[in-house]
Image (cartoon, rainbow, N blue to C red; front, side, top):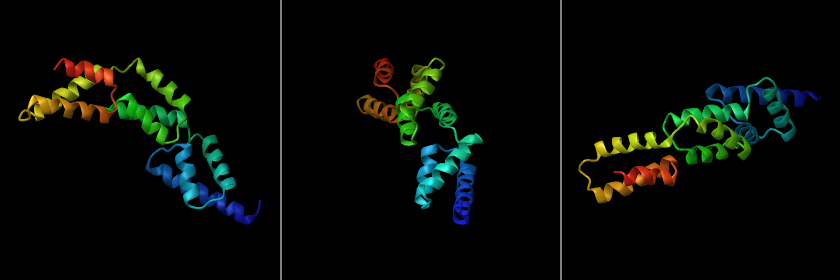
Length: 155
């Protein structure tokens, strides 16, 4: 290895360490950041492999942590899926992580509590206007159409 390649590898590792200090990141996010910093593709590959070997970059662990944190916000599965895809997590990983947590998570009580909270703050708005607003709010949060419809029809 040439001295310039060794220097580039060290600079790439330093850049990734700095990025990971702020929050965990996916392999895709790190690749994009390193390419933005104009590292050569071979250097990017070696740096990513290094961090995967030492366990600081693991897309499955990232996806599990992301899903758990987003469910606590609360967000629905549709939005969480979209966010994970945007972060470069593959469909198989997203599917298996969401499948593993789906048994523990029920959308209906979460949607009900969000609707009750919205209604408590919207007492001056007419029922004709509040229903579409709540519906759109829940859709933006990523809840499924069928679950939203069940809760809103019971209003």
